[in-house]
Image 1 (cartoon, rainbow, N blue to C red):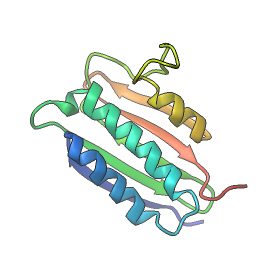
Image 2: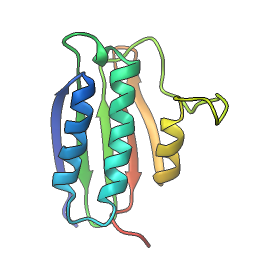
Image 3: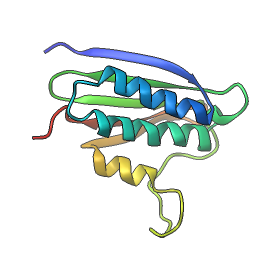
Length: 130
């Protein structure tokens, strides 16, 4: 079972979120779960730009894709910040704050590693529906 890995750095801007989606779509174009992976990375990149120091002028975030025939690991590394990513406790009808709930629903596992100086929010999906 061969494992592969792709990473790319993006500027911490709204425009880079669309670039991150295209990056995922390009590398996973032949996988049945490419749309799911694109949506997850879009949510994680949005959170990096909105809620971490990556969204400051000159900030950056890194998208990493790793996988094999059994799993795809998706990670977005940000530049840290005061708040820690967590599932929203706001009401379902409130706008915003539900991205990680979507990530948790679409993935078989997800988590956060790192510190206030930089963290990675990651998710794992299966390459194909089982």
